[in-house]
Length: 479
Image (cartoon, rainbow, N blue to C red; front, side, top):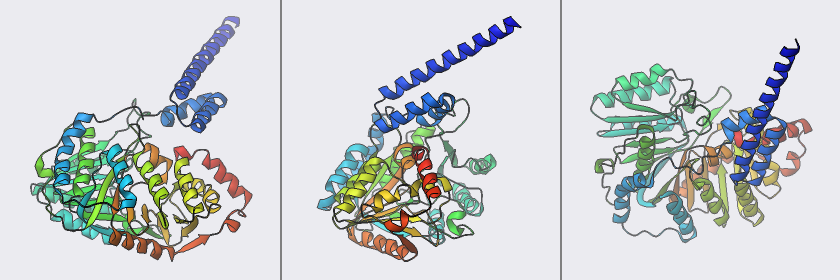
């Protein structure tokens, strides 16, 4: 018995020694990573007071990939040759003076080129978007490239899949990227049938043991479709039935864009970079970047991507600059509002300086936790003078921003930590008065279906609700 007790005590001592050696080593790594001090202190406290739980959370969600590169500079250089040639061939079209620095920022940190001659059409529901998408897919003659966070095995997903299969059998090249976590519930047979029809289908960052931990937190949230290098789609809608039908308790309100013209080369570049990542095949043929002449439209558009690797948070930094540059108004639609500190301060500062800042959120979200976290930030912006609206008709999934009748952006990026720091995202930034006015009207139309929140009423909500929101806010970077 004494030997058994001694062995048990030695085993426990060995376990504790190894555990705390790992904890201390992890703390050293976190401190040496020179992150935001608030995040560093939070992780250190969790590791000290909840060592086992904290270590598990850190392994899954805490490790930073910012110092890595997933694609080398040479690959970027080869792939950017064709888009750069098209960009240099376009007539000189000066950007609005107020946003030249913003466009230069995106070019400097993201190699994003501002293309003119682009036609922009906006869709605000799946009912209007899906028929146009199917029409454009049916007209494809050379290639179709699709990248979607969710490609669901339901009525809409199967309809799109069947159209793609028909085009593939007709000789059109079809490449599809889907996110492995976003499609966790999709039966493997769904994608196998696509491959059997001749399509190239790849999952993004497949999550499988033992490499589960360093991939689950970094997801491809982009929605990109390119057809023959001439027509492109980008925005907030995935390929699933709920984006058309909504929920039993309300409509699904979203925003998606169809682009025709030179800016499609930006979407093509974004897709082919991701294709290189999942397939290790570098596609640079000129036929994927056809000459587009003067273009069918008048809008200037930059396609901007961001990812959880590399030194910069491209889209977040651009949005902070855009908010700070606003002179008259800045309107935002987002399903989740868990802003990073720079974004929060930019919104507060703009409102305090007299800019009409409006924030529209769903009154009821698809995730209770993220909605509670979003609500925890509203007093911070209401007190600064930001006008907050809750959309009542259903779930607002739109990622739309418009400013000063000149700048607007639509894409996959939410105003939250996950989009800004952990996801692969893509947005179209549009410098064009007619498009900005059109999307401003979309926002104002939605505002008619909203209930405005006052600061006095907001601070009077029940203390239990406030406590729940504050508790969830502690985990905002993980939501």
